Image (cartoon, rainbow, N blue to C red):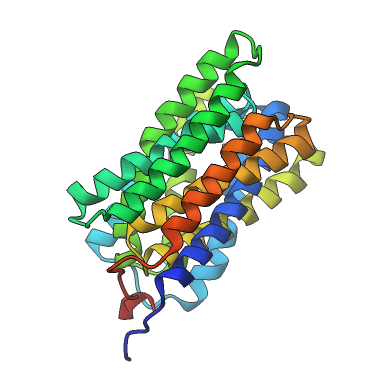
Amino acid sequence: MHPFRHTPAAAFLVGSIGIALFSGMDAVMKGLVLAIGAFATMFWRSFATVGLSAALYLPGRKGWPGKRALRLHVARGLLSTVMGLLFFWGIGRVPLAQAIALAFIAPLIALYLAAVWLGETVDRRTVAASVVAFAGVLVIFLGQARADLGSEALLGSVAVLVSAVCYAVNIILMRQQSLAAGPQEIAFFQNLTVCAALFAALPFVGAAPPPAEQWPPLLLAALLSVTSMLLLSWAYARAEASYLATTEYTAFLWAALFGWLFFAEPVSAFTLAGALLIVAGCILAARRPQQASPALEAVA
C-alpha cells in the first residue's frame, strides 16, 4: 500500500471540525456538571464512550497494539482523566467562554513542547499566528474580568489553568499517539483507560446513577467526544502538532456561542473584538507552512 498524502490545509480543516464538536461536548458537559457534578458526569459518560469506541474498533481490529502504542494510550488516558475532571469542575464555576479563554495557554505551551519533545520546527508564521490569536484571548479575558463572578470563580479558573497545562502535554502525546496507531484504536484504548481510572476512584468519590432525563445528554456528550477524538487523531497523523495547535483557538468562538445560547452568558464587545483577532490568527496559521507531515501508511 502506498502512503496517502494529504495537504496541511485538509488536516487543519478536519482538526477545526474536531474542535467544534469538542466544544459542543463541553457545553453539554457543563449542563450535566451543574445537574449531577463533575465526577458523576465523567464516570457515567465514560461507559457510553467505551461502548461507542468499542463498536468502531473491535470488529475490524487486526491485532492488539504493541507495547509502545499501549504505553501512549494509557499515558494519554490517565492524563485525560485528570485534565477532564479539572476542566469540567472548572466550567461549572466560570462562564464557558472564560474557561476556554484561560485554556488557550495550552496551544502556546504546546508549540514549544513540540520543538523540545518532538524536534519539530516552529516557524515564524505559526508563532506570529499564535501571538495574534493569544492577543485576542487577552482582550476577551480582560472583558470577562470586569464581571463579578463570585468567590468560586477563582477556584474554577485555577482548575481550568492546571487543566490547560495538562492539555498542552496532551497535544504532544496526541501527535505521537496518532503516528503509532489509527483513530479507532486510539479512541477505544483512551476511553477504556479513562473509564478504568474513574472506576478505580469510585470507592473514594462515589457516583449515584443519574436521573433518567440525564441519560440522553450523557449519550450525546459521549457521541461528540468519540467523533471529535477520531477527527483530531486523523488530523494529527497528517500535520505537525505545532501547526495544528492553533486550531484550538477556534474553540472560543463555539464556547461564546454555546454559552450565550444555552446558559445566557452574554457576549460582550471585548468578546467580539477578541474573536476577530482569534480568527485572524487562525487564518494566518492555516496558510501552508514550509513542511508538514504526510500520513503514514499505518494510519492511512
